[in-house]
Image (cartoon, rainbow, N blue to C red; front, side, top):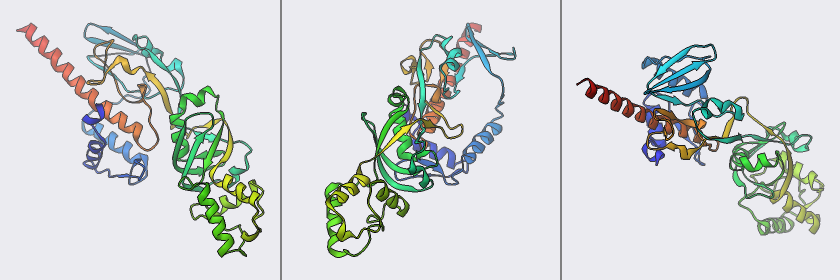
Length: 345
């Protein structure tokens, strides 16, 4: 419903009409062509300035009161602001206590847990390959149904990249319940199966018997990763393809298609923290983004129990719900002003 009213096409047109060109990756992720988030931030700030919108920072709202058609907002410094409609678009909070000012309005908060985080693998030798990336890998969290595919990046603390981040999003609550201690199974060649590996080894034995196995047999596997996997699974790099035993062939297949790593914790990127949880969706009218419990109170963005995968999906949710909320607020004001005009008449 909401996304049919303000879609990705609308987002692209909105930004491009203001000089910000966007690009779409093959997996649907969307970014500014500059690959710089400041491009989007500057555009929004410039638009606010053009519309003469006043933005106050450092004004923590600690209390929301409703009297008649008016809201009274009290800040931490004791200042009081009044407004006819109130839109809360604060983003998600990592701690449940931070939602208290919303709970006091009578709304139910779905307990927040982290989403979009990287996997920590402390002390694992794979971290020595930091900077190595694979264009497409399959990631499966053992003992769960969570399975994703996409680019994977090895870092100095473990693993990152879209495939890992998507896993953390789909499995946000499951992984929190496991206290971020689990095993991850990696297929470095998701388009390949055991029979394909057997066939490749047979071809190598027949056509390149004297060559060493140290050179990657699949172009999708970076050389450093290939040699790491050989060492991890006990295959001597100076082994000739003709001398590769049946046991070593099985180990090579396991290394490429069923490579297992223990994860012991998570890491967030700087302050780019996405929250699974927030204001319960059944308390919101998605035609206007207005609260069903308190007329005049609107919600948009990640403060709601909405979280998406990496690549602009959370932003699209923010753009869409914000746009619908704006229309809802406009309609509310017109209704109230019309009512007041009728009373005066």
